[in-house]
Length: 525
Image (cartoon, rainbow, N blue to C red; front, side, top):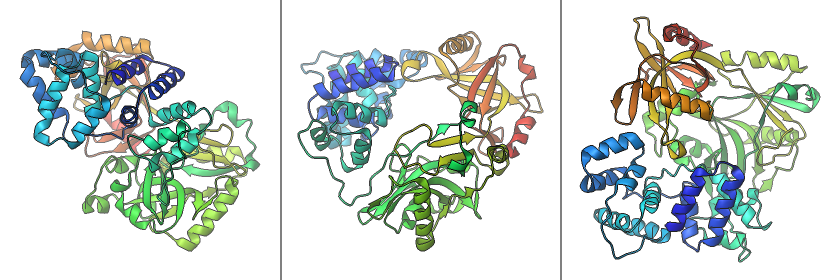
């Protein structure tokens, strides 16, 4: 745990991607099995402990600390694990801090009633940094700026050419913690792990945002156009070894969408967009959002929020790898396959004919009315390459909407932002003069603007609700967002899609912020 704690602390303060990669490589190279594999699983979100949760940590804190002091400290720090790690009154112990592999094995095999005493003993034997790492490991809230793909990139660099990032991504679902066979392959001590017939994730091809400077260089005759739907990108992998539905981040989301899995009666790997669909029309993203992140769904939810996939591309047809073929050839294969297979809950993405880019620009401008994010432009001769290769695929999203809203509440962030109020709830004026919240934003501002906002929150707090502060209505924020959707679950009746702070409007009085009726009109914009 000592080495893992040091890694987390250094990752937290490492800003550059290259610095994080170097730290990960060093850790994986210097740490023995199985500890490094458990650390890798923790960093990539593949580690969880059913018997040790946040409630248990609160119980331990209540037994060892003054409840009033703990409440005040928790309010100031804003993070449960960090508060307990700093406040824990360790007792003399004749044991060393546990090894990472020991933690994983013990918590996996211990009975529920034994976990509290085990965890207390570990906390007693550890210093504050190890306590923090241990508690973050248990709660699953590492938040050190490391994605699964970044960890895999570090493994690719560590392999010194033996394994590419794409190969590691394709192998990932063939291995499991503590990844002994994966490390053996990367270090040249064993063969590449094989998934056999099991369905595995293939790295998705991504698009670059189309900027004004890029438009002039486009050759319309070479490009193909499709709608960019407002759902989530998914990959469908099915064959003799099973069926899986993956998110764009390679997370297996099969359990949350059993009706899609049931429809995958084929042997292929497909790329598409998951949407809530009714009568052939896509519903707003807010409806799909109600089904995301669930391990299981009820029959009622499946009826009320029926999902389907709009198919974009075909990576494998049976065991044949099509990714090296040009897009036009893959599209022809996909159309022929779909006509023959006719899978339920799946339709082909429409190909849009256009004479020139001016025509496409007009279609893009009208995308909002149809509930579509914009357009995708793809070179007809482009192979399917994992990652974001510039010049092959472009995303041309509609322009964002904006609203002037009033800052209402603030909450501390996590990780390196845990000392700052960085999660902001904002609202607009209702007809009766009340402020009603319409969303929350936690990005879009610079470090200097964050410091300003944090100070403003501290200087203008009128009430506290645990870690949340209510702010006097005085600061206007210009909020950019992609869409406004009617939402009976919100007090205001509206929910914003991808809200972010575009500007701090210190020049505008709070009473001149937008009205709710103006925002509600945007739900049909």
